[in-house]
Image (cartoon, rainbow, N blue to C red):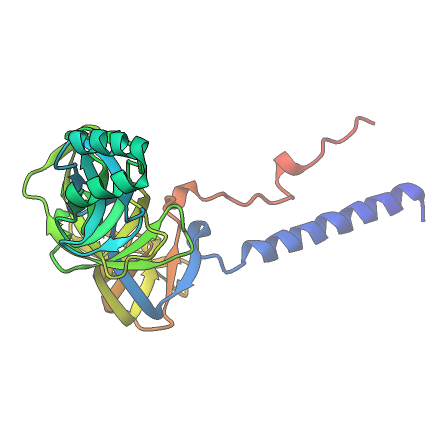
Length: 320
């Protein structure tokens, strides 16, 4: 057998083999126009509203001294929980501070006599809550306008909710809370108050919503930012499909079903809630049914397969 004949036979075998491989691959079960198949499954789905917020005192109260003078003794620190009427500090008026300084120069007996005659003024907690700021130290001179202590009755989260989501927010609604500073901690709260007046932030109309944590952990601080999830509705053990598998037109939802002829058939379905990733299926489909998904691409945009035997894939013959 001549060398030219061997080369010709080898080339023919390669071309035929390549054609067979292409034919087999072109018949892979991808569905029409490159669509892939997904199954109707059972699972849980939750509809929620996502937004951000920050930690604030529900009632923030600045405590100012009843008289100008000097702080003699401070009985609380930041983070302490105090009761209404509890003494927080002892203050000396400007006159008492001057008298005590003069008596101190004359000796301890003279100082004790004046301390007994001229009692200090107590600084009292106006409400039950926590000390969130302490702005004075013993011996410091303060005026009647200085906020020497700051109290909060309880920390809450102030959320900003877009007006388009307000129909899904209600009093007493459960809210998931994740602080940016502690992403591994999952907290829960409830909607305590919804503002009656809107605000405009970056040309967006929003409403402020107060969320009361069920439990205030010791690491929560005023000013922290958080991600909040308002839980609107949750369903368990329902039929689900990826959102990309369900098309809606003129208020009618439908899916594409694979047919025996390698094409697709349109099937109208009744849908329930959707979270943007999954859709609840209420009728016309059963668990395990196959549905076609094109991931949002039109069928015409699917990439066409090209045969290795087509003219554009053949190498040009060399001139003899």
